[in-house]
Length: 414
Image (tube, rainbow, N blue to C red; front, side, top):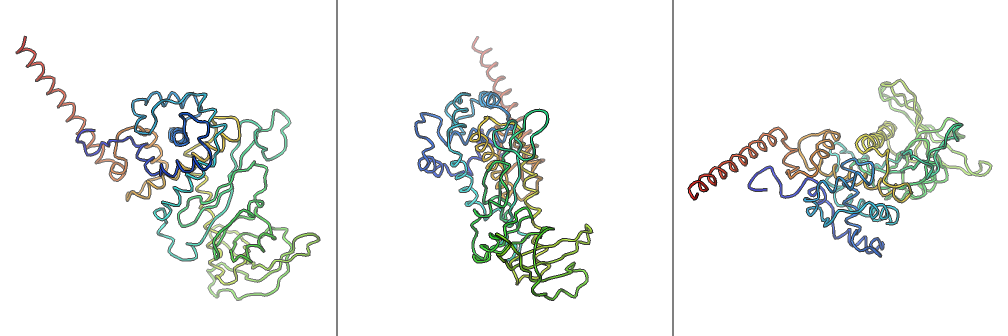
């Protein structure tokens, strides 16, 4: 846009899309057959449109198409050569495999995971820490089986559950599975495949002693809490720190019983810890016998990271309305939100100035299709806005001067 220093030749949305590898999207589409029998609305265009929905916060296909129409003169920058029809978008959401969205997410995560690292996590123990949890999204109709009893009045609503593992170091999902809300969390433990010597932290909803034994054989260390009704026997007691402020009250090896008739045994470690800040007693269990008890308690405290991530997603990309009433469309839309969140986190990591994520989302949403250098703006918004105003004044003055010269020329000719 002219010679301005703050204006960009591409809308903000295009600058975010440049973080994706278009060649990888094409390869994924071909491998998955996502563009089979498709004439114009390719997998790449579908991803662009669904990211547009996520960033703008649209709630319907009609609203999406109107939003695209209002920016029709800028769509060329996005790789869109036409405005998709409502019927085409609806059919794509119902039929195209969500796996292409998953592949794009994981590919983008792998490419930028190094830049997302939280520099405050300097200890090696934290760098190999993974956190697992799930969040449930309530649906407007009984598409997927929801949790709880059937209501006395009205119909029971469905729900979809996102089972997620984040790497504590970069605080971004590296494992995501979607199931109906009624599926129990512990069933997903069998799908966990982490590097040897990793630490997996989860809450006591993931009780599966048989899988804990599998983790031990694979040298994957888990940290969780002991259920109140757990059956165990104490085997060996370990020394606890002399420091009265450590909070460790007991550290012992225990044997947990499970299986048919409780004949199977799993050796674990039980740590009783007093949280003086909140005045609560915690009982942690882990299969790692080497780490200090205080470190185990500190690791479990990091589990709160994933709760904050779920809060960030639900507050800034509210999934209350979906563009389709089928499972495929719902999963595609959730993947799109996950990808939009990742792109903004990548942008945030590339900016030195500290920004609240919600403030970034608000600015992006207001100026998604504006021709502004997004990184320059976020580094110093006050200066950038002032320079933008000066540039606009200069442009207006230039246009006024040109009009004045034209008027003089017209008077001289006639």
